[in-house]
Amino acid sequence: MIQTDFDVLIIGGGMVGASLACALGELSLDVGLIESIPFGATGQPSYDDRTTALSLGTRRIYEALGLWADLASSAEPIRQIHVSEQGRFGTSRMDAREQGADALGYVVENRMLGQVLSGRLRELPRLRMICPAKFLSLTTGDQAVEVRVQVDDAEQTLRAKLVIGADGANSQVRAALGIDTDVRDYGQTAIVSNVTPERNHGGMAYERFTPHGPIALLPMSEQRCALVWTQPTAQVEIVRQLPDAEFLAALNTAFGHRLGEFQRVGKRTSYPLQRVLSERLHAPHVLLIGNAAHSLHPVAGQGFNLGLRDVAMLAEVLADAGTDNCGSDAFIQRYLENRQADQSHVTQFTDGLVRLFSNRVPGLATFRHLGIIGLDLLPPLKARFTRRSMGMVGAPKLSRGIRLTPSPSGRGQG
Ligand SMILES: Cc1cc2nc3c(=O)[nH]c(=O)nc-3n(C[C@H](O)[C@H](O)[C@H](O)COP(=O)(O)OP(=O)(O)OC[C@H]3O[C@@H](n4cnc5c(N)ncnc54)[C@H](O)[C@@H]3O)c2cc1C
Image (cartoon, rainbow, N blue to C red; front, top):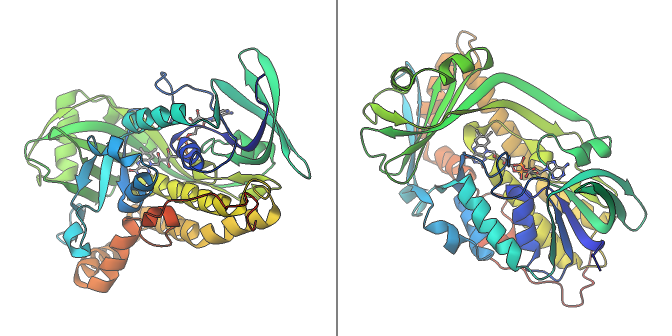
C-alpha cells in the first residue's frame, strides 16, 4: 500500500528541502519529500550550472550529517576574500588564518551537491520520495494538514502533522496559504559562468563592486573561477551574448588584472535578482524555509547558507519535540524565535550591501571607500564581519558539530 500519512511532508527537494530530508533521516520520523523535477533532469532549478559558496558553518552541518566526506573531494577551499571597488584604491582582505581556520568557506558545484544529497536520500529507510510530483494545494486542520499533489496524471491526497514549504522563491505553498511577499526588484541580473584566469587564484575569492553591479569570482578546481557578474537588467543580454573574446575583454576591464588576463569562458546563464521576503513564515502546522521564506541577492553568498541554518534549527527543534508534538503551536513558535535574529540580520545586511554599492548619490562613494578601508583597519569589526560570513554566529547545534538524537520518549517537550 502507498504511504499517505507522514509526520513531516517537505514540499520542494531543492538544496534546502533535500538537506532537510537528510537531517530528518537521523530522527525517528516518517518523512515525505515532494519534488516536481527529478535530480539530474534538465531544467532542475536548484542543481543547475551554478556553484555555491558554502560557509564554514555549512561545512560543519554537513559534517554532522555525515555528508561532508562525499563533498570534500570536489569542494575548493576559500582561504581569503578580497573586497574592492572599481576606480578606488582601498581594499579589504579577510584571511582564514586570522580566524584560526583552514578556510573561510568552500565552493561546490550545485550539481555535485545534488548528487550527494540524492545519494543519501535513497538510503533513508523512513523517507518516501514522491518525485516527479507537483504540489497543488493544502488544507490546514486542527491536528494535521491535507496536501493535494499531482503524480503523473492523477491527483493524490497526503496528510502530515507538519508541512514544510521549501519550494523556492515562487513558493506555491506560500501562495496556497495566502501569505503576501515583500519584493524588492534590484533591476539587476547575474551572468553566471566559469572563467579561467592567467594566474592561479590561490584560494582567493574576489568581490569587486563596480558602478554596474558587483562581480564575484570564486576559486574552483583546475585553475578555474566561478563568475557571478551582476549587470543592470536592461543591458545584461548584450553582455551575455558577446563573442568570447569581447566578453573576456569587458570582464578584464571591469575586474582589473589581479589574476592577469582572463583566458577562457564557459557557458553563460543569467539569473534576474530580486529580494523576496515572505511576510509570514508559518500557518497552523506549516512552516516556510529557504528561498520560500527569504530569497536574497547573491552578493554576499548567504542565501543557501541561511537556508541551511533554517534546516539545522528545524531539525534540532524537531528532535526535541518528538513525533507527537512536531506540528504543535509551541514547536512552531520555538523554531521561529530561534531563527528570527539570524534571518533578519542576514537579510538586512545583504540588502544594505546591494543598495550601498548600487547608489550613485554624491558622497556615498567616499563612505563606501571608508567602509572598505575601515573594515581592514578595525580588527574587531572585521573579525565580526568575517565570522558572520563564515556562518558562525547564531549557530544551531548541527553547525557546532553536535549530532542530533531523537527525544527518548518520542514525545519530547514540544
Ligand atoms: C546566481 C546565484 C548565485 C548564488 N550563489 C550563492 C552562494 O554562493 N552561496 C549561497 O549561500 N547562496 C547562493 N545563492 C542562493 C541559493 O542558490 C539559494 O538560496 C538556494 O538555491 C535556495 O534553495 P531552495 O531549496 O530554498 O530553493 P530552490 O533552489 O528554488 O529549490 C526549490 C525546489 O522546489 C521545487 N518546487 C517548486 N515548486 C514546486 C511544486 N509546486 N511542487 C513540487 N516541487 C516544487 C523546485 O523544482 C526546486 O527543486 C545564489 C543564487 C543565485 C541566483
